[in-house]
Image (cartoon, rainbow, N blue to C red; front, top):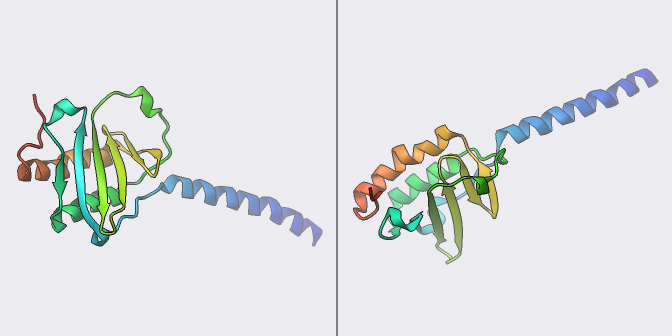
Length: 147
């Protein structure tokens, strides 16, 4: 009986470590309720990319943006965002109660939310350029890259 109990402890530790590892692989997700959002201000940085921010208040566009952001699988960064140079989209989420939340989508590699940096796969990040950005650019004609 003692041998069985002694064997159970290492097995339980191995299982616990495996669970923690698998949970860490699954990443973090943002949890925004588009029904609670009054609007989203979006600006590009550096400033020379466009002539000003846009304010998105259309419910369908808010849902498009929040679905994209909520769908991102965010992981602890393996790289230091301070070592990268590039452009960023800054989302200021304005809730119906007046509170605001800022999310920075930096290049096709990083996202800053909840005062923490996260890393995301290129495939996920590039969805913004492929799916979201063209819709915003078509609706808000001043929101475009200046060549």
